[in-house]
Image (cartoon, rainbow, N blue to C red):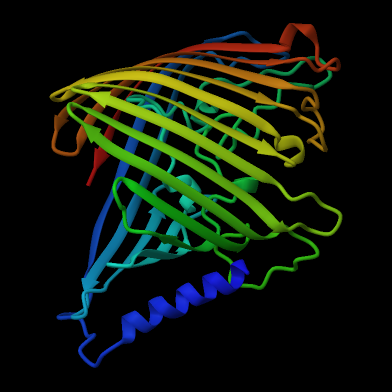
Length: 375
């Protein structure tokens, strides 16, 4: 039924695009170059392990170059493209690439992009290094005991152990098609379908070998009431065709964010079930204040991971917990240039009986400062 619905939606949208002999853009689409770059310098203090010392200064960088284009057809339909090039070598050189089709019917996104469940989620504002994304792992590295065991900090990015912005199986930028309704009386609904969890891959999935036919739904509500604004979101995602002998992973997320004047506050929650070693839940809470070019935020994240299932040798297979506190600030130095800083403390802990008591908790305190440049 869902496949028929998505197929019907695509056919209707396509017919709207090509309808009428006048559906020709006034001019050919032109690409614009944009993007961002972040460069961070920080100092971390944490306990040493066996032949391990992670305390000291470190640098972390992130950046992307975006190629964007949009054109409007004579029938009112807009067509846009977006290709995002990673600024660092190695790994995924092209991050996201997709096409947008928009009009009075809403918006359709086709390509390697986050799902409606991810894009419609609300979480507290955080003005420094990203707390709700798994980036804490860059400043806190659990150390090993004499047997080589250590607390696993995996499943933090795109998964509830370290982020409430999630999708089932952490599929992230897998190839998919998404539809977003117009916003009516503050409400908007989005639904996404992904054949499988692969990215940058045009081959048909072997549905006996991999999870396939992902369905992800997101919904949110935004409203202004007097001087107060409120945003509420909910999301759900699952696999409708599990690989042979496997489970059908499910993911849920909720968020609420309120603001008045320069003050905002929010809470978000996420959960993974039937994900094996990635089964986890997380909660993020925070409050922020911004006035003119300046802003200050205080945020907290707590994650719990079951750790059941097969894990890499040398890492724990028991439950793990993560607690993070961040005091952050930002200052807009000029158009597109923002100075940011974070004073943070995070702790990974474990109840694994195999890990040595001397390293079953890894705490780190760090001071990080950097520049964010958007262009």
